Image 1 (cartoon, rainbow, N blue to C red):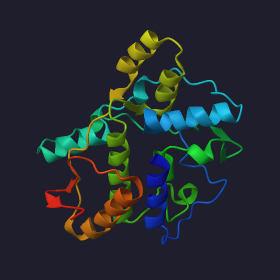
Image 2: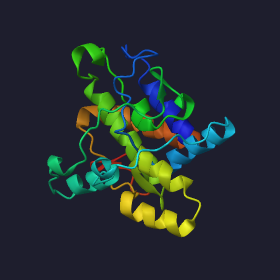
Image 3: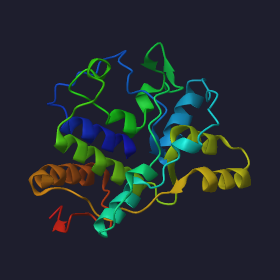
Image 4: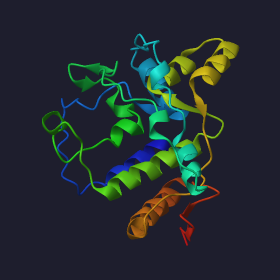
Length: 226
């Protein structure tokens, strides 16, 4: 189901002329968050290819997020404000899966990596640029992936993989509580009116191909999938 959602996102963004090319790794940093469900895809891929997990960095305190995607959406939907300075800072150190500027887990890379696209070359402009609607679609997709992993955990790539690699269940549970955040159900979607048709089309595709419909599927109070 996760791979189906990945595919639908790619289909919806197919008409954009991205500057991203093989070997372009400016955005491939350690600042990647994901669910444990996505993490399991990576672990399974590494085991099947005989690679095993790399040495994971242990100095992850600064990279641990304070809210999940759905947690942040819930905050905004309830009219509360989020202090940006409370969020984990961006760390520009290269990802530990990067080798010769290429991703060694490319087929199973997290959605955070798949959705980080740019219409300009980041190494030259020092910023990434993308249409507003694509950013909204990426946020919505990330929310669905979190909702799918009910009872799972969400956090930085190194912390999620360390948790999944733990052989002792009690140790893993303690590590998760210290390093990760429990996934949250989808509280609703924050979408401006002009982007609702696109998001509705995306949600319909997800339902038709996967059968997945979150219990609270709505776009800022507007019915979807009707």
